[in-house]
Image 1 (spheres, one colour):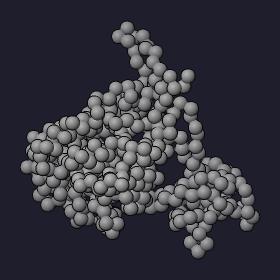
Image 2: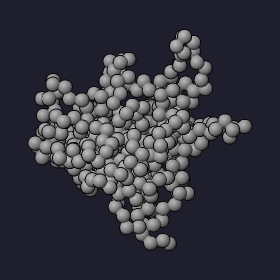
Image 3: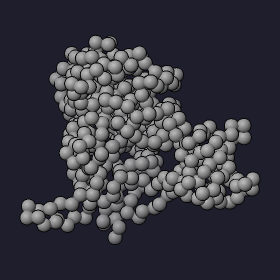
Length: 422
């Protein structure tokens, strides 16, 4: 066995949306970043609010983690009173840092002695910009996603400010997320948290004479997800302070799997046991969670067609979730739940997920009871008794996991080349 490598160990920062996803990564991540129901770029991640932020932060700290609140929307004049309230709430809740880029947010956070991390939306792409934000009171800068690994090395050599980079998750087709397409088409601004993701739609290409150009792909703006699990050694050798995983709208299964895989890769590299083969297997495991196919983004050059998932919209994972029903009641003494099958039937041996804002259980169906009788299968419309592996709650949703093998898709969510299919 090789000797452990002496190097800076990066903080693993996971995006979370609620207590369930926080709990999913508590044993693997060092910190979580999240938003409340206002002034962030994820308005749909609205389960955390000013009213429950303090309780949430209490749970973050009980897990031994740090919690970073994203306040990264554009701030207009009418938002200033609301910004004041949000930052006061953050200070009272003992948030460990604010993620921001708008100078108004930075200035107000500094006045309240809140620690400041500069959002990737600031597009920090050189050491002078990093030093500028340091002079404004920032302690950490999340670098632009459009930087190469070599450019990050050059920035690291010229500044002592903490540097954070994205290593995994969805990629925006616009520079540093500054996109106006959603606002232009639908009046919903991505810069104010309401992005409707038109880049994930089917698009057609027309010539200047109005002729439709026939292309193999339909999803012409659909960027693949970033995945750097196979390049952890190179990233850690640079001396980066934090690795960030996008995913404030992903489910706890994604949060658990991705945090566990990156934790192992970081620990293996630190201990001198990292191998590319193990990283490849971890990449395949993450490919079973929701993803759009994987790429290395801008780390090794400007991405070309290989950085786009033109052939398939949204989820490239072979595992799909099919809604089947809802929890009516939970009986802790017998470890069972009453389920109403509102969408689909289920049978013994099915793999299911039961989830809610504080719940995430993935398990096999090992017993079903209908009208006090054990059955092999229950159909849509029935109320069934189901043995559960952990605590569930009324109104939690129940999904069946279905695996579909597409001969065109690799296990990590990438596509075979046409030559491979011959």
